[in-house]
Image 1: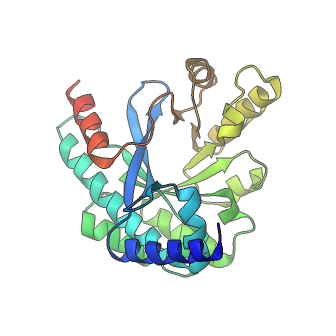
Image 2: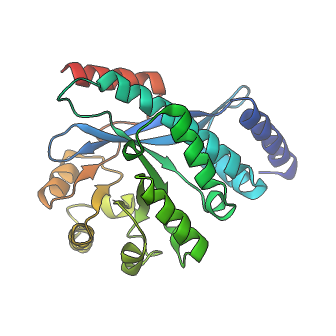
Length: 267
């Protein structure tokens, strides 16, 4: 990407951020035991008027570099909580399971800048979403040698009743010690480990060990990037709790995801 193209993209991203031009898609997460939707990851998308749908892989690095990521993260948190509160309202029938948890990605900059707790309080207050229906998703790079401030922030998040998921686990950055150190509720196994299951004996052994370790630490274990029935069956067989990936569903626009939930609720 040339400098002028990148500058134009940065200018457009600032305008989209200020003008409500970013949107969230939702990729459901399924219980491997029951097959029901238990959560959904909120994924940012940018429908650009000229360039079409721009992938986060293109615009998130620009947002990180310019510091826009903190503002974008706050917007995503508020939007996701509002959507999830609507899912919960649709599902509120006595004796029925509550609506799915919404999982929202959080950047290190949001935490380090001190913005996260304020954004979180605002999103929960404005949406009325129950804190136990929200989960914040951190990448491994966020938690390598976490600062005291990061640890205190995450402890405060858990004190609110909000879940904390560690994404991309098993790719070698975060150690098993990080699982003990951090106040996590969920660990998500990286798709690179899932891709060759169950044929690759080493990856199969690693995934089995990670599922057992997660459970020993009282964490929910989610496998990402499930693309085949064979992978799903293997993961269910070793006791992995939840799965996410194209085998189940691609990320969906909000209306399509809400419709899916309503139809599942009626079924």
